[in-house]
Amino acid sequence: MAIDWAVALVSAGVFAATLWLTGAVREWLGRRAILDRPGHRSSHHAPVPRGGGVAVVAILLAGWIILALIRPEPAGIGVVIAAAAVLALVSWRDDLRSLPAGARLAAHAVAAIIGVAWLPASAQVFQGLLPHLLDRAAAAVLWVWFVNLYNFMDGIDGIAGSETACLGLGIAVALGFAGASGDGTAGLALVAAAAALGFLRWNWHPAKVFLGDVGSVPLGYLLGWLLLDLAGSGWWAPALILPLYYLADATITLARRAGRGERIWQAHREHFYQRALAPDGDHAAVVRIILLGNAGLVALAAFAAAQPIPALIAAVLVTAGMLTALERRSRG
Image (tube, rainbow, N blue to C red):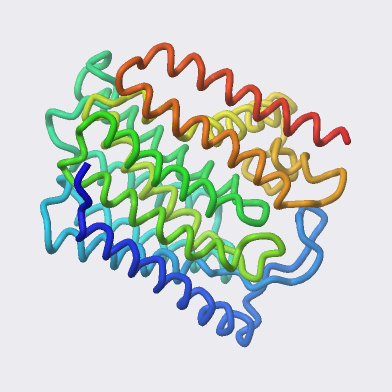
């Protein structure tokens, strides 16, 4: 496969810029006392600057804009970039002074509706199983859920950056094996992975800065769009396999809490990855379990280009193994 030098150069620049700007933003957040202070639901024990996502999202969007200016990119990319920027502003306001859950959800829903409206008319996210309007409505609902689970799952050091890097690399690898990277989606995914890797230098355990909602919400929106674009292009199995751990952990936890009559929108420490911290508080050990499982999911997403059903079955087993490993760790 020939090297796409434009993508390589932009990705390298995004990595370096995110690495530098996150450090600068961290210092600014510290001076302004914009901190995540420990509480009884927290997974850390000392105040940590919150809002490093300002750097990640700003550089990532700049990288996507550069790619869009120099080469053909998927339809609707300009609208998606604008919507992500607005979500970042809303989420930054939420980081500084909490917004009502309804207001946050409304912003996510509007962004998703706008995004699906700009998907190519030929794109069928649910592979023709639903009429066109129902396909778009279901895609919007799924997108909103993905944005929120991305926020829910950003609860320990290194997890969101690692997941973003795995999803970005996985999308590019899957498209490469499918021979379908010509529409630019693979390049955008690699740029997202580069931004995540630059941020991980500051967010790996012990974290020196947190993403905040200003990072996790737009990242969930942008990665969700890439996955919907992947599914809409016919590669539904990789689009489902790659985020399967995040989908499983967040959805199972939500279902459990809803079944107990709890307020599902409130902060808690009941995700599999959070409970896995119980024995020793070692964030890096927990994230390494997730990274190992995600490496398997990336490989299966590539395999799914040729054998979608066997790859999906294997991915379910890998994800079940990840959840089991985390559950066992939670019990010491």
